[in-house]
Image (cartoon, rainbow, N blue to C red; front, top):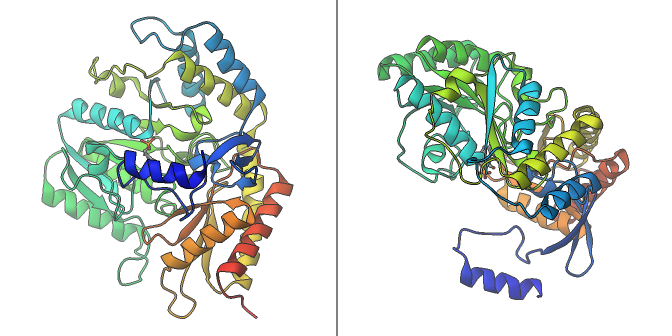
Length: 427
Ligand code: PLP
């Protein structure tokens, strides 16, 4: 079916908020390595890895073979009423990788569900429904996770089951000033004193994903954790985007902040595209759910088999190191582009989470319309990237962690061409 026909049928059959990138939407028919191929046979370098889901690339033989072997048993799903070997093995693997003291792991089907599970455990643990979250955070699209998401335009629920205190994320405020860590902490303490009572949890992204790949400044999360722990709350690190080595230096984003979370939530890249999420966290915290969170599909044989094969691939090839090296190479390339394109206001990177801010060259303000033009021009040039940022002006690059040096250099060249096609160049 042609892409325009499919787009028209989608508009008729799905709600209007199920939008696609590009005015002329793309239908992806096949994937090979870091490339996807559309219905007309055009190849694109996928530098958003699906949506940070294709962590180790398309069509990975070992993962396909493991999934096929599971399908050949005839068992796609049985439920947690029965033992599932791949679920137990995956839990052991995740526990070892996360390295949290006396921890257990459980599985669900998405990032939102993973955060729901961790938040529910925190609520059950001390009876408080007071959650602290960071400005510009995004944690999912359900009632609870929406209530603790503060990124403008991404709050599915204006009112949630929580009392929420939004803490500063260490970035410039409306006055353009970057607050000192000590001031952010004092502000949080003041707000919590005013609110009174215990706190259930602090939930944070170690690098904020949808907000445009910003990390809280060094020391902030550690100090926030101390404030919240003093009021009885736990630290939940939402590693839905940052987990599995993507930030380069570590397997988990939290490690760069010098904190030890009580729970880590994950999804996206774990199954290399298979729907799976989960929580690894302290046994006492997750035990406080006491059977309240059994998931029908969570931990199913197919998804956990795909996830085990993906984690094997990540470990065997040390893709965390690859994310660090290729991330540094891409960031160097982006810095060169920033010097030659006046619409590039800033670039930054945390491993293979790389951001390009598109701003108005005269006012320096975020320019979402130009960012969309660059996104479309990049697609025309053969490069797929993501979009994000509180103002919608941040191009996001997050290729599969198997990306090669040659592909990284090609992507920089294609982005250069897209910036040229979409805007002006510094003489
Ligand atoms: N947490 C973070 C940091 C995310 O980026 C997302 C999705 O983009 C979610 C949670 C929600 O995950 P899902 O869409 O799988 O429910």
